[in-house]
Amino acid sequence: MDVRTYYQRIRDTEGTIPTQYTVVVSLPTDDGGKKGVSIEVSRHLAAKMVVEGSAQLATAAQIAAFQQAQEAACKAAQDAAALSKVEVTMVSSDDLKKLTDDMKKLKSGAKLTKD
Image (tube, rainbow, N blue to C red; front, side):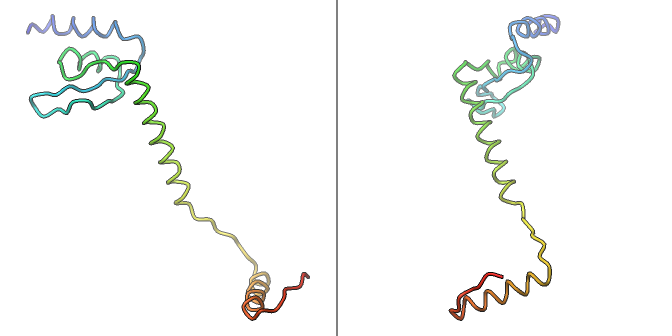
C-alpha cells in the first residue's frame, strides 16, 4: 500500500466521524485480536483502526450498551470505594465509661435510666 494513500484514507475516514471521541468494536485479526470488544477512542485512532481493518465504528445500539456498561462499572467502583471507608467516632473517656456501664446493665437485665 502506498503511504500517501494510507494516510489519505485515514483523513477521509476521520472526516466522517462527527464527535471527538467515538466507540469502535474490534474485529478478529490474524495476530489474535478478539471480535466484539467495544472501546471508546479518539477520532483519529478510530479512523486508523477502521482503515487497518482491526475495528469498525459502533452502531447507535452498541454505543448505548457500551455507555450503560461504563456507567454500571463506575457506579460499582464508587460503591466499593464507599464501602471501604472506615468511620471513626471520637468518644470522651467519661462517655465511654457511661456506655460500658450501660452495656453491663443491659446484659444483667436492669433497666436504663436517662440522666
